[in-house]
Length: 531
Ligand code: GCU
Ligand code: CA
Ligand code: CA
Image 1: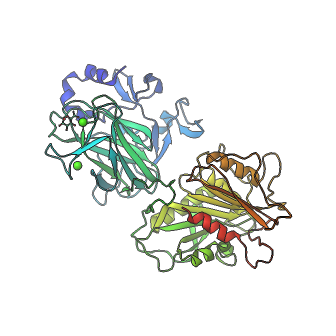
Image 2: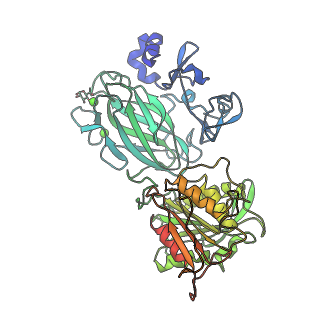
Image 3: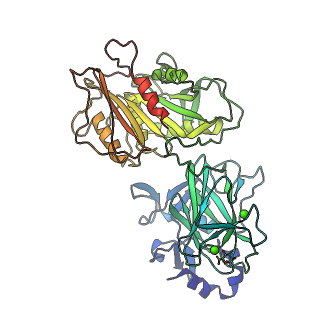
């Protein structure tokens, strides 16, 4: 079953103007309409486009392959059935976009497919920011291009061109590709390595006739790679430029993968906005409930400087005011001051003293950090979580499904039980540090049955590709120091795991013999600053 044959059978007279039809195919209603898995199916005597993601009110959710109605669970994730997705506005993008439905890009229009706000248009040209290379050359021997030339891939299957962009929140955006070709040159569109759709790149008749084809694609929050790769041995058409229409899309540095150590900062949407916040107590509505948090902003805040964001959670019995006040961010902010580093410090709060952290606090994290990213200049690739005891537990909980938005987590006396955990947890790597006192009876090193800090460390070692030790070396009585920090070996260099144990109990503030201050803040600061 080859897509072009179907098209020829149905539209023999319209081949010349295929570009106009390129996005008007209905979405397939059934994945089995596409037995060869090429992304195109055949229903009601016409081609249909297999869509793998649903635009669920602005959030990309995988479409279920088995559940026919409602919601399902596949590949360790929620999925939504086609029938249910179709109830959302523009839920199935391929059936709702056409070349005539390009979103209005005027400054006050609101986009039809991203979650909120105004659409803007971002053009990516060859050899400028956001362009990340071509399997071929950049040429200028056919007139009519814009910028300094056009992309000419080698004529072979799999040849392509790469781009890098950043957005603040997951959204659907319109990708428009300006191209020219003397014959059909279909290509797959890959976002972050996954095929999200296909463009037909139908012949424009001449190398000097340029036109566009477009596709709606899902972008994740943060940096995204976009690749267009040929699916036939003709290679891609010549590509003049890429245009992205959506909310707050900016070109990103090609090495800005948030996983790389010392990557350049990634600016959030709030960069450049006048400061509208002040230090102190704030409220935000999360899950329909008013929630409190405390913020400490950089001194001499510069709206164009992307700052690290620290999200610091208190323990059981505490509230955010404690972190902001007498706990002084567990000594981490003083450490930052010593190092001359200004950052954004945020402490969330449980509603009332004695309340536990739980599942709703995952949404709270998203709500608070998204608000910060939208209104402050945040380096979205350097959002860190930390906390003590129950605060270490919620930090750990967040680290098991927020790996894409949290750069590193530091749990002080954390545990992996008696706290809500996503089930299943995501196993993506995330840099991690933890501290535990060997006589801690509240959140013990090893409480048996997989419960305890030790098992968090082993899990992170596994997720981060470290050599998983059969036994992690811990602090022992009789040694010269009162603490022992072990850097796990063999980990993916971007995802270190540091495990510290000490002579003491349930505390964030252990001290070595004779020392007047704790070794923890300096050790943790060093850990955070390697990114
Ligand atoms: C010609 C043309 C190139 C084009 C190539 C191709 O060589 O000049 O611009 O890329 O054909 O077939 O891909
Ligand atoms: Ca070529
Ligand atoms: Ca160009």
